[in-house]
Structure formats: structure tokens, C-alpha cells
Image (cartoon, rainbow, N blue to C red; front, side, top):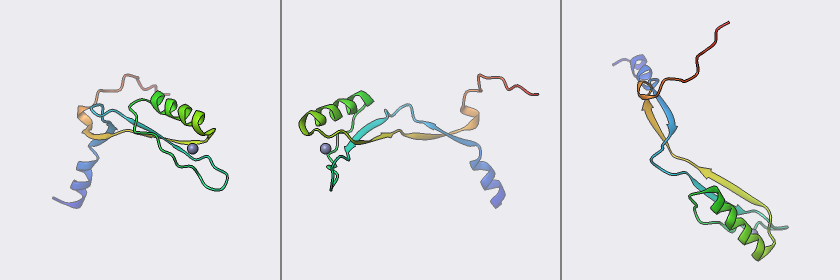
Length: 92
Ligand SMILES: [Zn+2]
């Protein structure tokens, strides 16, 4: 197989969110005048759970600055397995 043929083969795959794996949400407290607190939430299955952890941390410490992280998982699918676009293209 030539180099060109191998490259072409990989172009037939597209990435999408892996719907079999739930996204993850985390928060890290970055409050602090001289040094960031860096308290971390547990890994949460919903954004609201990470928000609840931040509110609880605020009540305990008064800290109000957080770094939020959203992680999803991806999979590669052959493009002919994807659903066709539902929007018709308009050509001028
Ligand atoms: Zn904190």
C-alpha cells in the first residue's frame, strides 16, 4: 500500500462524542491571595453536582474562584456510518 493510499484511508473516519460514556465535570478552587487553595471536587456526572460542590466549598471557606473542567470521550467512526446531514445545503 502506498503512503498516499494509507493517508486517504484515515480520512474516511470522523470523530464524535462517545455516547456510551458519560461526560465528567470537575472544579478546582483557584482562590487565594498568595497561593491558590487547589481544593478539588470529586469527579461528577453532571455539571450541577460540580456547582453544588463549589457552593459547599464557598460556605466552608468563602472562596469564590474556580477552574471548571468538562471532559468528554470521543470515538472514531467511518464517515459512511454517520447519519446524513439533516440540513440541505443552499447554493447561490
Ligand atoms: Zn478553596
